[in-house]
Length: 134
Image (cartoon, rainbow, N blue to C red; front, side, top):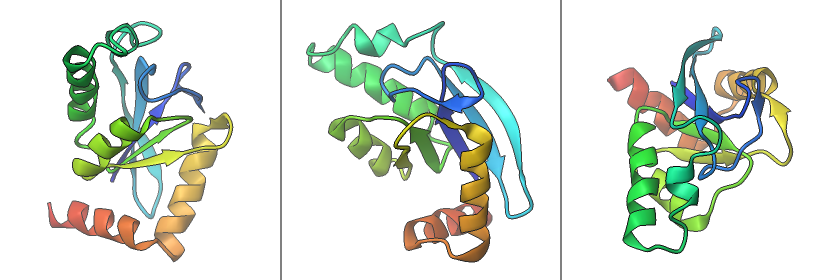
C-alpha cells in the first residue's frame, strides 16, 4: 500500500497539503516499508496551489491536479488540509491523515505498520484489500 507524506525535507511530516511541494511516497506492508520516490510538485512551496487561492476554477484545477498525481496512494499524511481538498482525496479513495505536530516519517510509518498488523480500522482494511486485489 502506498502512503504519501507531505514533507519539506524528506524526513518529517511537516507540511500542509496545498503548500506541499514534495511528498515522500512509501510502500508499506506488514513486513516493513520502503521509499518508492520523492514526488515533487515544485521547488519549495507549491505556488501553483497557493497562488490561486480564492481564484475559483484555477484553484480547483490546481488542487485536483495534485490529488490526481497522488491517486496511487491509499493514505496522504500531512499537518493540515482544507475541507474541500480532503473531500477530493476521499472521493479518489485516499484517506487524509493529519498529524498533530511535526513528526518523523519513520515514526509515522512504524505506527501505521503496527496498526496494519494488529487491528486496522475498517477504512484501512478496505484499502489493504483493494491493494491485494489489484
